[in-house]
Length: 322
Image (tube, rainbow, N blue to C red; front, side):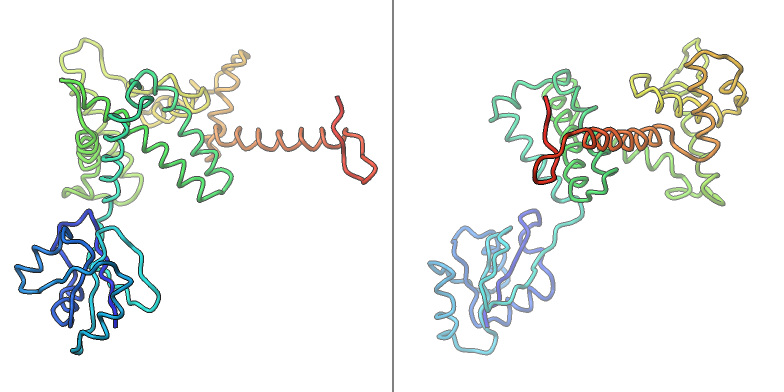
């Protein structure tokens, strides 16, 4: 029997499963195609000999001549997932969750030093993509295309990686590890009911604690500033207007701001829209998503209307008119 041992290039050589070590120790022969295979020094220290074969196609004949009861184990190069017909695949090591992010870091390093376009990019030149890519991901989510959504999430992740790689080149910069460390620290700090001894009775307590922690963070960030911290500090006004209104109202409501401030009697169009946002929130709706859904329905209606006005061709289909 031919067993093909599969290992990860992101796991240190020798960190193998018990099943892999059992197979290696009981094998009649262990072979690989390269004298540079990273497992060879580890196997030698374990007292397991490994021969070098010219190619894997010759392995079946060698297996027949090997004798013994343990069969033959072939060491694939780390990351090589190919298994010939009739062979048994044995997973020797597994990636930890997030291991592929290391591949992305390495790929970004190569692109930044080798690709003319990637080399010339700056934080400013990449700024438009910080808006564009999340919107493309949202569109994929709304259409229900899970595969497209996964791909678009990768594009969003690339923006984070790209900006961190650019920042790492500055003397006062930071790395992707600093970015990850910062968000981990924030999540741990804002979830004391998970990482500390704080008790909560439900999601409302979590939200209340979160707001109090953020309030303390804003106060600490302001330091000795004369300006009193506001619950609205940090709300980005560059976001779409409906989303901005929702975030402002949500923050204000948590701080106990009277609801009538969002539902006054002004006839100004902006104030009327603000009241509609408040109404949507009261009904548990997100006005941004509701308007996007309405826009998609309107798009379909317009396309149907356009189709209905096109003259029919002789075969019954509509034709374009100019």
